[in-house]
Image (cartoon, rainbow, N blue to C red; front, top):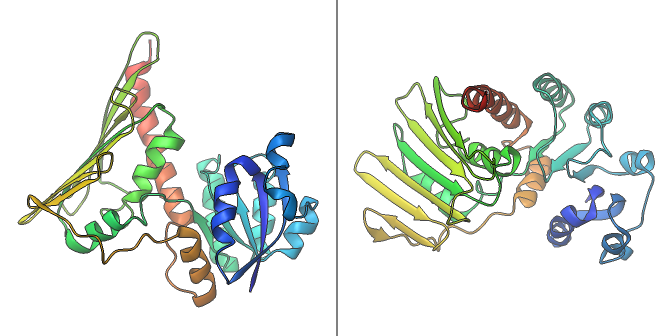
Length: 288
């Protein structure tokens, strides 16, 4: 059984903790928490509070957010000790820092998995199995935020097994209103196998719109996640054979069985490098 330590903002981590407690291969031993007194005194009374050094020493696995409780040097020390890390949010690292973590995980054998909310859904499992390269994917995601960590990173990490996230060619078009209260960005990714991904994201009405259209040889798919309409060549798709996979359960299985690492720190590094390139191109449209 793996001993789990929880570190970070309890309001952010609470839903994840509630789920991992259902995994019979893990035992939540303690927490190092931040948050308001109301948040800390909600469901967490049954999880003892530790100081950070002691919890890290006692835990096999750490469930963390992106708070300042674990600065980069501490993350490095955790990985060197072959502790495993699941991060529920996207860590605020530089590319060089992330590359160093990749190197350390490879040397120590530590598993470091990054949250990937779309990757494990039945729709994406079906898409990975039924659509082959070369393919064209059109992805539209509109939400009440233009924060890249909330919008772009989940979309890019979703593509890891579909097209990859290291394109041969990158194109960006971006617009904002004068008040900067509305924005639209188009990102076009072209890959060496002739696959293309066209990402559109922003905060236009209607919000919470999420659609994927995919095209490959003899196969057309349309996924409307907002209205839960999923079509393949105009016929409704039956996802009954595809259960939603809990990403923490997959993480635990990776540790126990030494299986293929999914949505790992290497993928996050590739996504981070791509986001940096996208941001540079966006700056051409926002410069005064």
